[in-house]
Length: 462
Image (cartoon, rainbow, N blue to C red):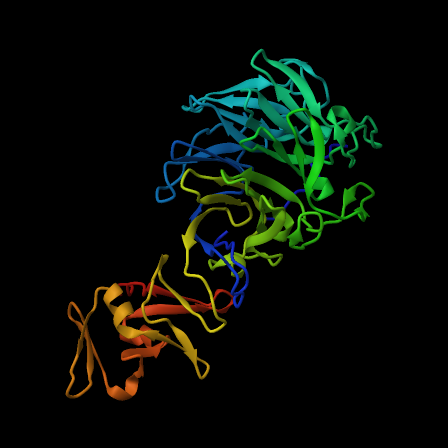
């Protein structure tokens, strides 16, 4: 009986590194703003090089490419039989792609013009080290280049991390075990240790940090493991001991200290320059962050799946399978079941120093207001002139009648004294009044005390 890697998933939107609203101790506050590019089929892995975004399509068994998120996607490969459930992608310095061709049990090399060749693996599912042509893999899921130039592979159903050096020799650097199930497939486990003494349970994603340490999404164990340059394997984050199906750790959802956090089928991870590890926590429909200090937070999504554009954990995802960091610090996420690539742009916002504080953004641009927005009698009030002028309105005030006039092009709106309140000699209005006064859509994200102003869509032509 043929068995596929167990943790098949269902598949960001906007993410946050913020504490919840009302926490006045935050020294820095950042949210990620998301945009999305839909693709035509289920995607799994992502690669990024020189501004181009590459992705593997499980549904069509091909590779796609985007020159930017604003441009339509194109097919890099079109032969739907050359690859079979392609997953992780690594890219060398000359632009060649290396793909975990999962169901073919091989590593493929794809040139920039889409030519596909076998790079390693005999094609027979099994376990064997040795020369690239005769080495055996079993449903490899991810790969990455190491500091030594070797290609490292998450060999999922062999429960091992493999390495192919410049001479074309495949060896095993971590993971062991010879126990097999009734179908003859190797059974994973959980054990710390060095090299072959360590045990993994369907590792699916790998990434190096700047020190040469390799991080592993140990999916069947619901943990993130780490391998030091000398081959020592330890657990970085994740917990749980209860098993399902007799072999997999039961997943869960919990933020907090790394040793107490819980994941549910983490299928992808990446490491940022500052040492933060981002995890695509697939069955939790979330993107999680592991800080260098060892804390796990959810920066986007929640266990409730969906496809909602929003801020931080207010957003919903549907089975994200991969996440990568671009040179500007943005995150790209393979949102598998939503058939989309999501971009998360880091946006710095003013600190929250009081429970009644309010932040305002126009689109994704924060407004640093001299008159602080505030909540009065249950309603949020904001400074009219500062926001109107930020939107290129001309604001005039008649000292005799106390009438305020807003003008932009042919549009004009007047406010009577009863329409505004005065705070510190400045006119403030209810947040919701801006929809009518400035012709903007206004949304309120209570969790982050955030008012979001966006331009109203142009009316459709009849």
